Image (cartoon, rainbow over all chains, first blue to last red):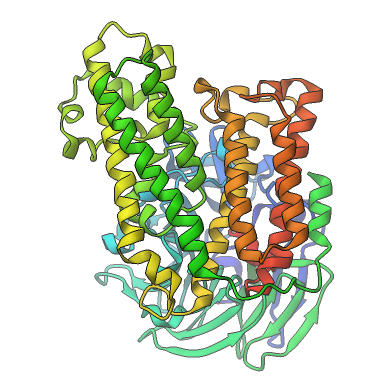
Length: 305
Length: 330
């Protein structure tokens, strides 16, 4: 995923606030890079800092920087229309808001820059919420999540929707491999007994998406909290099922499965992936060993710097 | 709220030990009778509207209240047949922060929409114009109930009640036509293991309590500086507090079946219900009055404490993670 922030910054708003107020929490990796981890203390549920709020828009918690670091792109919904918006902020000028364009769907969540640095991949989760009703989902029967590719100035290049059978499979998080394969993970909004596939891959301009077989996700409670890519591997975590999976990005075959209670954050490191959990522990997934433990609760947002 | 968040940090270490959940009893004694009741009340509601659709027809209004009661008693069971084809949403479209329901109803009336007189077509109109919350507007909001165009109002009331009856019957059919058996006896394509069925029921219980705390109580509470009594559920027909009581009673029944009558849980639920019953504020108008507001907030805290207990103690005994991220849902 590269060593700079050029592949996108994935972090919740509270971390942005903490970044402006105090040092972020950094952990060294064996290959010399560091991890930026986000955590919550007592502000769960109150996630929107005023600095990244714009009137009538809600910020959902993910962002991507342009390759030169000059612009930050964040996802949010227009409160009145319910349509997704990508906000553009001037990172070199106090994060002043300089523009916005349509995200191509409802309820955008994660956003990542492709390796060519010219195209953004946007996970439009499809779920409409409203500040008056908090996290209450307002449109489950009609939701249509999609993966949208847009240029940095907002021209939509391609939009990948799932088939109607999967219209309740909310695309929440994204990771992009070095060969520009977008791995998207989902949170199923229908019955827990529906056994939906929770990971798909797609490449811009290469036809339809590929979905992993639903069997791989057994025990994950229809919920993936985070995804990361490393070489040809995709790692996904389900805190509800306490399960970590590695899947081959080319054929979507399951290559590694581990039980880890409340695992959620996941990011690439030299030999594989590193994960964090809600009790403050940090794991290397190649060995499963705890490499650090902190007196805080890691959430799902973990990135390599 | 601060106290509650503090409580979140103090994790209970040892999960309560529940015996195996009696899935058969939950389906047969909790779920199916409630959906039978909803189907019966909805069928009668359709008949009452067919006889006399006037908003001042006492029989129709009584049938509306009875059907709404029956809905609230299943409103936590939003999975399986009620989830299929968006039936639960079509029965109950709330909360509605954009006021989509009155807009959709006005459009149907003003355009003299042909869908109103054709049941098949009506099932395709905006879900905001369908279901029991739409009927709340039609019967109890003067914008609709006091109308010069009686015939269009009447046709729409009949369309809505007919659609409610059809949907309620379809959900019951689903439970009695296979889903109930599959859930009672896991080891089939839908529920491969007992634990999958338990998780679905536990999720329904948690979601139901969360809805009561966040939506039914939280919406009218708003903030201390800006209480929002007009956001209370079904306040037009004076039902807001009643919904809290009915749903707490229903979730208490399910909670006891799931937890094997965990004494602490039973007591906490009884306390919350008793507190709601003495509130004497049917539409939460008191959210603006500091003293009444405090009592509503305490009730909300009670419900949140019950959710916490279920998460920390009962969930783990069913093998359901109680971790921080498992609950976060981001």
